[in-house]
Image 1 (cartoon, rainbow, N blue to C red):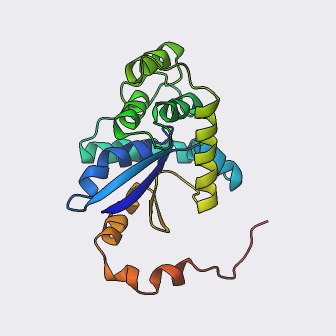
Image 2: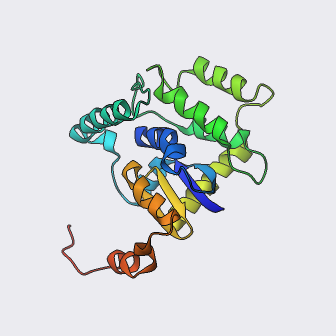
Length: 213
């Protein structure tokens, strides 16, 4: 059985689409998934990069494209009332719902992502967040220090592994970034000969080039 790490932040529409598509993309492969919510903003800060929604022409393209992709895949999607928003409460809730030593399960992650991307409401609205918490874990107190630390640890681990965006799928020591990397990741899991040759290391090796100042 293959192990897959699925790194995501509920703020990303591509992460939502990737989550919904994952079972279909890996049909016929024996695998298990560890869902790992992280803070996309921390990756952006680490790499000194702006997010897609912070560059207006890119924001407009992003939402046009994800709605087209969702329609083609038959996935329901509604742009939330405010975007970007602060996803901290959602990601902390995910980790608060996870058993000690485990990652959040698919049911919890699905609820978080659909909270954001179905219905077009404000993902940060206090009443909606409270309803979500009661739905997922009625006896759970608002995410405390342990959940906050688990989210920090997951994000730090993502940065240490070299993640720069979400969604990212990790298979062994290989990282596959983005919704459009699913075919490549599936090929790797199927044992495509390309991965046994030198392509991965050769094409990923540093090269000299112009540095923008």
